[in-house]
Length: 219
Image 1 (cartoon, one colour):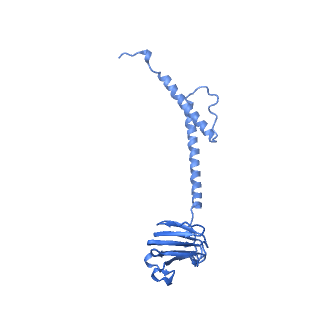
Image 2: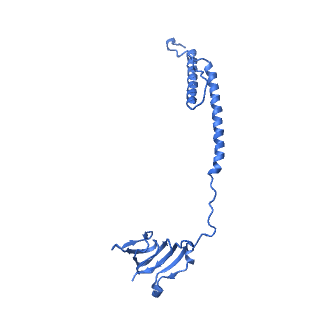
Image 3: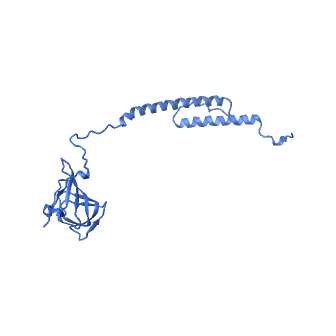
């Protein structure tokens, strides 16, 4: 086999020197990075004009120191986590034992007529819940088809959410009638006069008031 001497690659000595320089650069980089992190390291790089085999030993020494410091930091972090975690955990809040959950099945609701004198053509109301302290109430109202709810007002602020049919509402200060379909919502301030209408399918809606529920009819 013919060998061209002029095309030989780098000698083994040159390759060895290059590896030593790479080791030296890596060790110096680690030292500089650790110094930035605040670790105190020996000034082993001062006065060295060129890499020697001692770089390898120093590099191992620095790596061991780095590993030791890192493990200590990990242990400290784990210990702090163990101390802080119980403090972050929250216990179940205590509730007023006099207050109980309220569950109402629709088929078991008790309905009362809002206008008994109208007989079967009267809207009906079912009280879902009344706060024993504030008297705030939630109730369902179902209104017959093609019915006009006369002008009236409430002592409390009222919300209304349509859950069946269509409900048309108007209030004082505006001549506009607003048609509310299923899922529609309205807020009516306390003592604001308003009225409503249903269409051919009637309507049922959820009403909430932030105080005792009442109806004051306007003649």
